[in-house]
Each structure stands twice: as C-alpha cells, then as structure tokens.
Amino acid sequence: MRASPDVTKLLGRVALLSALVLGSFGVLYFGPFPYKHQLAMLIDKRVMLNSRPAPRVILVGGSGLFFGVDSELLTQSLGVRVVNMGVFGGLGILAPLEVIRPHIRHGDIVVLVPEYALLFTSLSPFQKDYYRWFLAVDPKAAWRLYYSHEKPRVLMGDFLLLVRDKVAALFAIPIKGNHSLARNGYMRYLQVVNRYGDGSEEIRPSPPENLVGRNTIYQHDALKPEVIEQLNDVARRLEERGARVVLTFGVYPEGEYDLSRKVIDVTAERLRSEGQFTVLGRPQDFLYPYSAFSDTVNHVQAPARAARTRRLAELLAEAGVGSPGTAAGESGQTH
Image 1 (cartoon, one colour):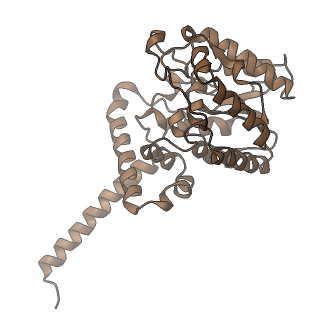
Image 2 (cartoon, one colour):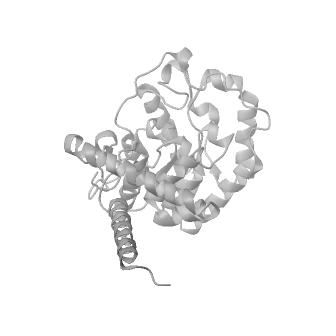
Image 3 (tube, one colour):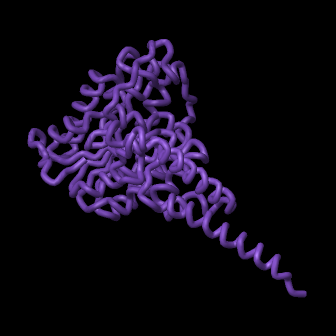
C-alpha cells in the first residue's frame, strides 16, 4: 500500500526538520563556540600543553594544584617549563591523563599529585556527569573510557547537555566576550588562568572551623590495591611515550593529618614500595596550619602556596629534574 502524497510530503518535512536540528547541534558542538561551564577549561589546557615545547614539567591533579602552585616560580627554580594541568579533583586523574597522554613528548616529567580523597576513594571521576567534559575535549578518549560501556542514550544526553551549555555561552558572549584560549573552551579562561595554567583568582577564605572536609578520618584500609595498580598502569603508558613519572603528595591541614596519621603514613609507604614510579618526599612536606587554607582542605592561600612551591622545587631538583637557578626560556610562549 502506497503512502498518500500528503503523508509523503509530511514525512519529507519531518526528515528535513530533523536534519536541520541535528545539523545545528553539530555546528554548535564542533564549531568554535565556547562553553559557559568552567570544566571546559580542559580544552584550553590541552591547547596550552601543546603550545609548550618539551621538556616540560607537567603537573596533574585537581584544584589543589590549580589554586595551590606558583608555576612561574617553579619554572624559574627548575629551569624547565612548567604546565599546570590541574582543574578539579572530581574529574579524577585517570581520565585527564588519558586525554593528555597522546600529547606527552620525550623528555617530559609528569608529576602526579592526587588529593587524598582520590587516593582513598577512586581515581575515576566522582560523578557520571563529569564525563561529558571529556566528551567535549576528546570524544575518542571519552568513548574508550566510558561511553562504550553505557547505553547510547547516555551519550546522546551528554551531547545535548554540552550543546545547551554552548547555547548559554552564546547568549553571554555579547556581554562578557569569549576569552577561551582554544576559542571553543571555557569562555572566561584567559580571565581566570595564567599562562602556566594556574588559577589567577584568589578564593575568599572561610573560617578555619568551616573548612570543607574537616574531621574526615580515613579508615585503616582506605588505600585500595586497584589504586596502585591503576597508577602503575598510567606510569607505564606515560613512560612508553618517553616521559618520566613521579608522584608527590597534596597539601593538607596539620590537624587533618593528625586525625588520620596512621593510614596516611602507611599509604605513603605503600606507594613508595609498590609503585612503579618515583615518590618524592613525604606527606609531612606539605602540611600547613588550618589558617593557611581558604575554603577547603585542598586550597591554600598565597603564603602557603609559595612555601609549597619551593618545597616541590627542592624535591624535583633532588630527583634530578631541571637545572635549579636557570630560568627556562619563555620565547615563543603565548598564553
């Protein structure tokens, strides 16, 4: 039975409309339009990483790095270009490393700085919602890591959420402009991140008694064997690309360390004995009073940031990284 001309015409119009809608979404997703959400800075940071010639010291971690290191001071101390790839601990470490791994070059030094919450919970993103930002920066990596194991509607739903975020940014651009380094990254990137990848805005401190995470006491068996296995696998794959991999510890309040001293010290020893990578320093190297932190146990204020950077530079220099006292050339480096 043949369809009537009216039905055929209607179906044709529906098909055309669907094609136009999907085409519009495709233009938004693949086009040079920024995102309004700050996690899109992953896209900008990957562009920044690619713009720096090797050898580089590449810092990988969460917001404890983004707000907690003076990468310019570290560059000057070591004589090696520093790239701070830290964004947000909730993204984990495995997925960001998978995104940047193809861009690692021979001679790079990758410094893993997992926050304690990552070591004692999971190196994967904390929530499924975060995977859409890996879909934004590297669809192939996102497919391998996540979407190949999920139902198709999850991929479509995250795709639509990304398009919605770009639409929101389009409405904001006439007022705030597009300051994405990548043009299709975070629309405020150049306003809130310096040329090394550090956050350039200070966080307003909270009273020490209100710190998020205060009195978190980790259990004796907090460090899971799979965490070390995952770190060893990461180190192996990075070393296959000619990089050297080291791990050091995040900042932490002295009072929090006292509450969980036993498990943190055991964790440090296990990382040193079971990890197939170099472990620099001890947790005690990066302990500071509660007053040195801003709004969480991972974010330090300027004085502690400088002290942390100097200690990190000392540990890296002791491990043979860089030429201390010789500033790396900045020629050819753009923001």
